[in-house]
Length: 117
Image (tube, rainbow, N blue to C red; front, top):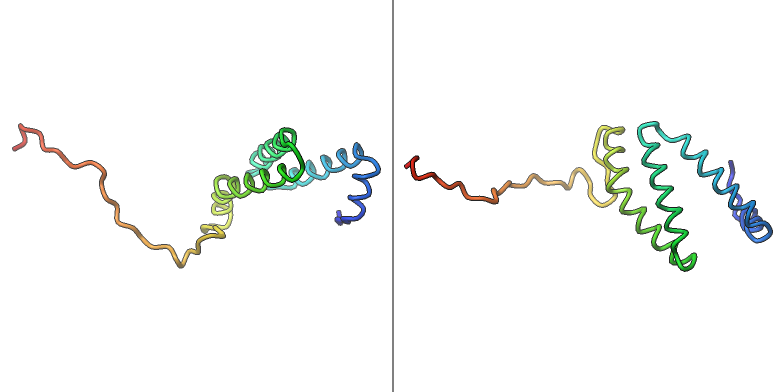
């Protein structure tokens, strides 16, 4: 489906109920087209988006909250799945070439028991 911004704007202004029904239909179709392994993530994310829209005081607040949620969800839910699919790590914030190995430092000291001395 091609997206025509003006057409969607007109529909939202003239018939908000039709706009909402079409919006839901398009989202459901997009979720059905996702990989089966990520479909449950997409459904869960859409549920959270819908809840955020309901509880927001205004559309701008909703937009900001959803944007923040999307950034967080991408890194916690979708990035590992993309890693599995692509066979390599993906992150817009770090590149594979810039990663460095770190030294692991134990948090507890080894305490010898008295009978081991």
